[in-house]
Amino acid sequence: MPSESAAATAEDFRPERRLHASSWLFGTASYLKSFLVPLIAAAVIGSSREFALWAPVTVIVPLIAAALWRQWVYRYGFSQHGLVIHEGLFFRNVRTIDYGRIENVDTERGLLHRALGVAEVRVETSTGGSAEARIRVLDLAAVEDMRARIFERDRPAASAHDAAPSADAAEREETLLELPPAELVRFGLIDNRGMLVVAAIMGVLAQSGVFENANEWAAPLLARLPLDAVAAFGVAAQILLALTLAAALIVSTRVLSILLAFAMLFDFRLTRANGDLRTRYGLLTRISMTLRRRRIQAVHQTATLLHRLFRRVSLKVDLAGGLTAENEARQRGAQQHFRDLWLAPLVRPENAEALIRVALPQARVAGLDWQKLAPRARWRIFRVLSLSWLIAASVPAVWWTGWWAAALLPAALPLFWLHASLYVRYTGWALHEGFFALRRGWLTRRLSVTPRNRIQSVHIGSSPFDRRYRMARLDVDIAGVSAVTHRFCVPYLDRRDAERLAAELVASRQTQ
Image (cartoon, rainbow, N blue to C red; front, side, top):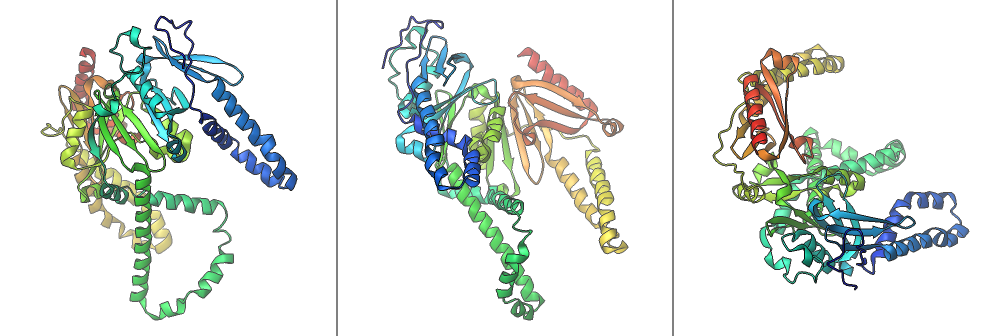
């Protein structure tokens, strides 16, 4: 491999490092995914022996040639200023990604990657969006060398192009969290993604017209079932059978959720090296992500009813440019769960604060002075729910069952009052000299913490109903907030409290 001269400048630097020898295999697979639908359509339309003979020559061979050519022309290297990438099939281009802009060098490894000892590399910057560069593929030693050269910026610039650092980064890593199989089972029972898979299968079957032709296949099946014998057992036996079938459905979806949990988070490890955090997980596709502490904008803790039943919570983080994960997940569809920014998929509540402080050293959860919502917030929530229920449910109830059902609608009002009371009880905010914390919800309890110097803007909004009750809604925006459920939004605040809180947050932002 040609050596890189330390005297090279950004103008005359020429990258000389190549991709792994097996890169063309993954390039071909990527091209085939892009052409998969046209290939299937062509196979259906022109399904003949001649097409079967000519398809490899006319389609697959050119794709392999394109992948081989891309591998041949692709080069990367490390100049004084940044990572330099030389690529292009027909139009050659050279890109320089400044070291100061690079935040993450993450990897993804499927079964074939792991068999060949290689990884697909994503170079991400703080600008968000999709990955700044996707390098397909490098061997593991080259990936570690890339991380070391990019992130060890305290070395003199003149030595940036010398031999790779001799220290082994893995030896300096401190393991903070591991998920054994028992924890993955708990995660599957809590997360219940199996129900989403069942719903997706039902949607595909509905779109394919299976249910429209149900009489053709359901009638013979029902004819074979001993329905007369079941009817003879009586109502109690029928109810027991229905409950048994429902229990079997629930158990099967939970088992599927556990299998998905093992596929997603197998061998999950959270480690700390050189001040930054790194997560590794996955059974079939192995994911390695770097959570740089200076890029962490917020930590979100979630505790659903099942979390509390198992005495666990989940922790995620927002990163600067945090929409990267969400946008890329939308582009890649089924692999969205691989890009969850986990700090801890599952951890005991007593250990959660220690991990939060690892990610945000200035933050803490215990002993905070939590401020409540406006005094009349409970009444407003109850009133909105009650009126919405009585208006929305009255017409269907009278239409389908008669006027007697409308008399039963007020029976739900105590539940709405209970919800309003518990929501107000478990929702509040706390302002510390170093961070801002928000908790909300009672059935699913969420806690979000962000340093005050990460706050980008503060908004106060008042609807006509807010103004009537002298309330306001406060929205706090940070760089990297990536989900509606993780927004820093405080509704039903007293107007004076909202203005005072906004002034303090803005003042702290201006002084830091």
